[in-house]
Each structure stands twice: as C-alpha cells, then as structure tokens.
Image (tube, rainbow, N blue to C red):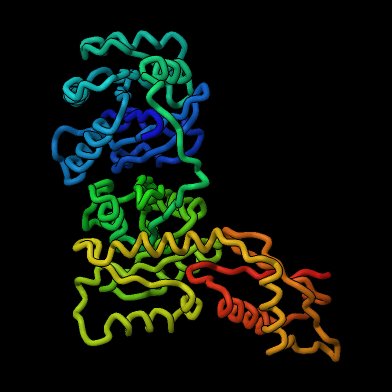
Length: 438
C-alpha cells in the first residue's frame, strides 16, 4: 500500500460505518439501525493535513456464532487488522464495556498493531468522561468522539497522523492510470466468487444466500504491472421486487459503482439463462456509456453438448441485437476455468475506450459510408453531412455536423453507427452519435 491503512473495528452498532462515511464525506457504507448491515471489508480514501489515508470499514464483531455470518464477519475483521498500519477500535460510550468488547480488545492487543480506542457517541458537551470506563482495556491512546455530529473527529485524525510513521508511505500511482472495474449482475450469479477468484483470496463473503453482499466493495489487484480496482456489488433486482430499505440502499450503491467505473463486467447465470432483468442491467450499463464485458458464469454446472457454448451466445445476441458488439466470456468462478480471460478482455476494452480517432481518419471513412448510401432526401431537399469529429471518450461521442439534423431519420442514424463499427474497433464500447447544425 502506498498510503497508511486504518482498520475500523468494533461490535455491531457502535458507529463504525457512520464514522467511515463522515471522514470520507460520502455515504459510502450503508448505515441503518438494524444490526449486521456491514459484512465485508469496505475501503475508502480521504486526505487529512495533506496526507492520504485509507480507511477500512468492517462488520460488527460478534464472538459467538449466532448465525453463519458472524464467523465470516470475524474473519473479515481479522483480515482488516492484519492489513492495517493502525487499528481504530470503536466502542459505544453510552453503553459501557461489553464482554464482546473485552474479547475484541484482547484480540487487538495480541495482533501487536498500533491502536486507538475511540469512544463514540460522546455527542454532548462534557460527555468526554465516558472514556473513563474503558481504561480497563489497557490501551494507551483513548479518545472520545461523536461520529454522528462530528465532535472531536478532527482530534482523532490528528492522533492517527501522530502515531504513524508517515515517512514510509509514498503515493506513486495516479488515479488516471487505474482501471476501475465494476462487477454487476442479479443476486447469486457469482459476483463475489469472481472477485475472490481474481484476487486469489477471500475478499468478499460468499454464501448461497441472496443479498449477502450489500455495499459496493473495492479491492486492488495488480495485473501485469497495471493497477486495477475490482468493485464487487450487490445483486440488482427489479425495483418492484426489493424487499426492504437495505436492499434498496444496496441497489443505489451498485448504480453508483457503475457510474464511477471505467468498465463493467455483467455476470449472467448459465443455469438460469439470459433473462429480462439481465437485459435491463446491460441496457443501463450501455446507456451510461460504460465499456461492457458479459460474463456467463457457472458454466461448469451446464450439461455440455456440441456447440452448446455457441448456441448460448447466439441466444443472448438474438435477444438483444446491440450485444453483437460486446464480448461474451464463459467461465466458472468456482473452478477458476477461463477466469484469466476476464482481466485480459476487460483491459482490451479499457484501452479501446481511451483511444482517440483522428478527425482526418474519421472523415475519410465517413466519405466512404456516405458514398455507399447517402442520407435520404426530405421533401425534395438533400440532407448533407459535412464532417464528423470525436468530441469525447468515456463515453465515446462522435459529432456529425450537417445542414438539417432534425430531419435525419432514426434508421439512417443506426446505419451510421453500424458502419462506423465495421471500420473501427469499438468492440465492448457504447457509441453515442450527436447530430449538430453547421
């Protein structure tokens, strides 16, 4: 890591995600009165006094295995502590020490990591004396804060910088050099399994329970010297099928992850086939102008026949003709079959999305296209396209300057896009054509 990592740990509902969102000045983690909302490790970066800091939000630590998730969340918290340069141990000042707090305190002491015991919910003036009940944990650095209203959080951030050896941290990579790769799809298609397979470690909790992943979770991976941020997301259902507010917030986080990404991997369940909701998700990705790779997962569970893979691909493309221009990969995240192709294809699409077509080359092709099939006349008047130029990439926008853009029919606009795709390598990239009067 090129910046200090601070792991926020504590029992459920002590305010970890509230603090995480406050220091990031962004509602990155879902916050709710219900316990156990955060499950995976969630990373976020901020700057304080000119120093970049990376915070890890973790799920609520429960020492007993009341359900399956408790053990998985504890493992995630343990991973966060092992990664961290400093542990921010958060407790609830309004309730006092609990047996689970004491168990977690012992675990942190045994880790040997630098620790600040942060006593949260000191919301009012003169509530700082709540820290006194936590001196029994034996930590030297104890500070009161209010994550809810921000009281004393600046003091806490100052203390973090004082305790860290900042000389060994060095920011080297520009954000412009990093591919942000969102992994999206319906619930239980294998998004977290693919994330873990690409990282070669258990970064996200994986279960057969739909809705296990709730937040959009970032993970860094280095691929042939290139920096890639994988963003594991919650499954997207139809809005009418959302069961509760947590699922609604998860869907919002996923849509934000798509918007902030460069390329989107959309997973389809090979057993269930390509359905209407898969189409809706892909349609949303294309409308946002994001590079797209379609991943058909769980291929190991499909009964194989001759040309089954080809037939499945034809079936997808026949249902959604636009997908003729997007790559489709068949993998098994479970057995790791063909997963090496995922980052290869994603990086190829990323490089295409950053390319700029010279205006001369574009107009040389335009002349050929117009000569082959000129725009139809409108009420006896010729429609003349004078020239074209690429005005943007990410999303890719090509502007056509002409005498009467409003009269150009939709069929001819589609013809122009299809012809441009024949002459240029736009595989995996949505194209937006803009028609302007000149």
